[in-house]
Length: 394
Image (cartoon, rainbow, N blue to C red):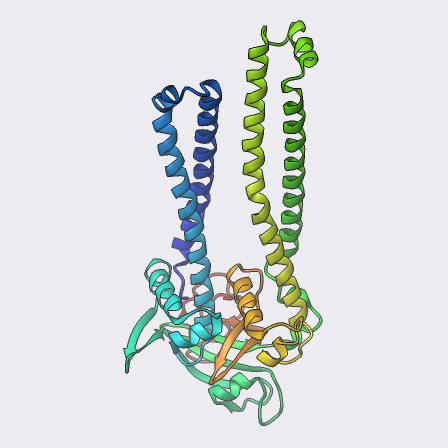
């Protein structure tokens, strides 16, 4: 509802294309420059004035900018997705930037700059307002009622956020929200996640864990093999018996200088390739760590039958700092490694809401259940009115 979904899908494809092109330009340009340096080593005038040198410099800079742009764009899209998810779960319709700073663990200036940047690019139905010198976000959605599904008792917003009905003691509460001509409900069903870590894990998280593990193993193996090749080639570089053997064979070059030149080329390209693959190792390691951390968070959340986890309870997770743990949860949500949970701010209390789901479920005009909706726009079977945006949000 708050994201420009079609545009974001296009931008994601664009980021992948730019990343591939950028890596190709940088790798090929650096490889050509290394070849020039090896071929004319010591003759820097020839190297600097070679026809390929300015092109390689330009393409290296261009490729580097493409890689940086794709990474920055990806991060901003993740930030926009987190903000949109947080906004959809709000019942007030107004969120202060100070609240977002408290929840995310970032500074107020960072949140202000970040949100002002991502809103015009990736978000919609979000407006900035200023009152008494404080800036806040005004949302498109408005809450119409909060209820208990068990006894039907009306809830105040603050009571809904406590997760317990004061009349029947049920935690099966929900809020009806109107957004323009769209309608959806926010419900909490913590029983679904009890002893089920997969309920809180992001989509295909197990596959990502296996993929990053395999990629890390392959990258480390490739670096080790290349280092062994480099060491072996260096050892043979001045080995006269080896050089003589290659010279006497009909398959090799016809002088020691040419043989050593080829060996130097092999060493330089192997070093370049090992360095390139080596740069991917910490990235893969960081991704693997993020996935493992998200799985641990999911296992931790599955222990709670309540609709939320307090900051004090977060402190029991690994006996760590609750604020630091909350920042880790926010990071996992940004990376979409967690779902069905979100940070909340209720008065002066910050906590993590569990099993919070946003669903389009009943007609906003007559209250009839929406059954068999196959597309985003649905015609109510009872009052025959058109309802827009009838989809499961999360």
